[in-house]
Length: 131
Length: 74
Image (tube, rainbow over all chains, first blue to last red; front, top):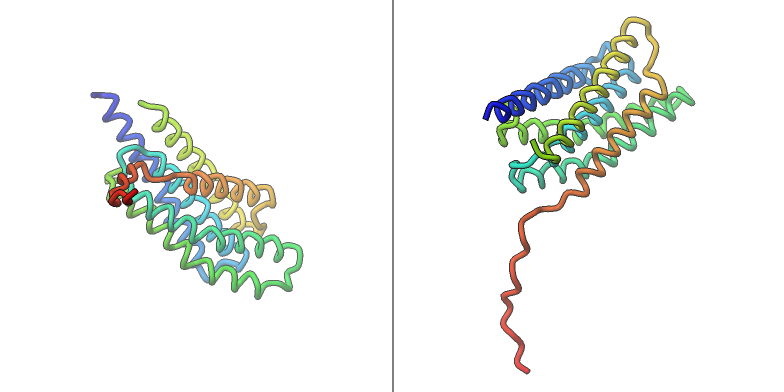
């Protein structure tokens, strides 16, 4: 019984750290005083961590299938935008004249990344992983 | 603790590790103006792709309902 509480507390603490990070990245991505490249990196960081949190939730037993299905949908919907953002960051590094393309990729990706981020947070809360 | 829980825990630790590295890069960028290294960005992509593949591979454990269609007359 003691181990169950320990595992639950450890899981909740780690998820808490993950969601604190997501909050920090969201703040960076929306910070207009940051450079365009910095905001794009922060958005991609949010995307990467939200995908990781989603994968951890998908593998966690006891989370309802409908919640996992929502994570799967949000993950699949955000992947093309995440990939496009990554490609745009690399392109911008090679040629800074492509700033407009990076700006557009960032604007296009923000809604899908925000949806994935929100879905993982809600899924963790709904399923009791994070109190 | 079962294997699935251990795997989920390891995955989360990877997420935390990746997040700490990225946050450090971003703070570094704030103070020095240097962007995240190509390698750090590539690591983020590798983690994101692996996580997305794990999520895509999940399928519902709900059993499919039995075929209740009436039998066709012979």
